[in-house]
Image (cartoon, rainbow, N blue to C red):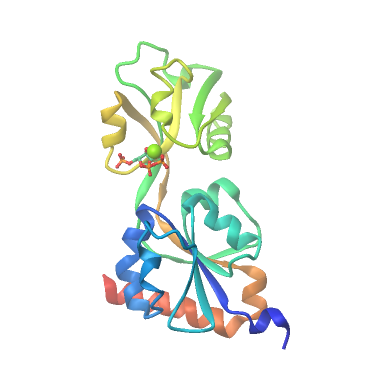
Length: 222
Ligand code: PRP
Ligand code: MG
């Protein structure tokens, strides 16, 4: 047995909204991570579980795919938006958890006098999704100049930094509160269980058991 095989498997969970939505599913998996795993005021980032062969790490939702793709974590929970943005070839996404439903959309200032984006050949786009945004506008023959922000991109159009934003929309209240309107949906998003392909090859039984635990927890929690 190699050293890696005897090490605990690592499950990467995202902070924030997805973690809240994941709570009932996680409860039904019986994995039972240390209680402060779900308490985001805790500064700890790695948590033991009831199973000594499994630890949980809590990371930014945008980073889950990177932790799993690079093998730091073997398995994780990640929004489809993040999978689309990074498009890592070494990830396998066997299960749609159906939680964290939202969409990636294009939005602009409400009642904007500006020309509709479809009519332009060049557009400045504020987003934390440069790849998704560039690909989307390229498919419409629009050359997108990306203003790469990590949050609060809703401010960019009114501050004359961008013509449009590309961001997640859930209830729509952030757009509304900032005088923006959604003009196009790029993709619908839910959270997925993701697995590192090498981990799946080297530890198929253990990973298979974890996937099944999530699958049946989904059935019991809905
Ligand atoms: C997300 C997203 C939008 C908002 C959408 O931001 O970037 O701003 O939620 O939700 P709504 O349609 O229900 O208003 P979040 O609050 O997660 O923070 P961040 O952008 O700083 O990561
Ligand atoms: Mg936001």
